[in-house]
Image (cartoon, rainbow, N blue to C red; front, side):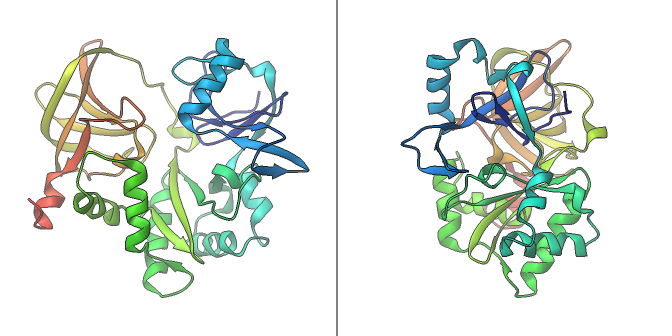
Length: 313
């Protein structure tokens, strides 16, 4: 079996298309159903129509059609996989064909990022995008931070890569429905630098671990209650990963883990955060988990250092 990691796509023998949602696959590929052949579907690929499934609806479909594949995610048996679509393959497909992709890839390569460290996930990966589709770029490992800086530089130079306007920020905020105010949300987001517009299309810059960074799976702990903490972040190397990881200096909590993309990159090492979520016990340590549901209520991460600096608290 080809090595498979987060944000790859897989195609089953039934032509169901799944987005890979983990780095570790102990008994089948941990993923989420995204597209299924459907003659009434709104997307098309090679003359076949597909229906796109959002997160919650995909679970309903899977419970009806493949209940044995449903766990906390969808677990696809390896013998059912027909094809693996790594994000790097989408660069080969769209570079020189789609001017938006070409502009971003050229910008990243100019910054010294090898093309084999750049990819596209989301609907463009299988070729099921429509006119309104965003572009989800992937950059692997430490190269991601170089990419983010290159995009920031490109935005400042007034070319086809631009900052997000207020309306788009509101659209993103309303889609996420976070537990922080719009003003706080946008203050955190603008600092991250992992979103932009290219030729009028919204794009994301997503972090995926390089192979040597994939070491051990995230263990599931036992929920023992909820907690709000203030703590200093001591390490944020995987703050943009999925899940995001923030090591903290706190009497009780070893690290904060966020499963929601809203709080990826939310704080830097050395900053003080406020976080509220579910406490999990794993062996001798406790961690705070944010994003225990798709749109978590009563769970958040805020950089108090940033908010204080910007005069918001």
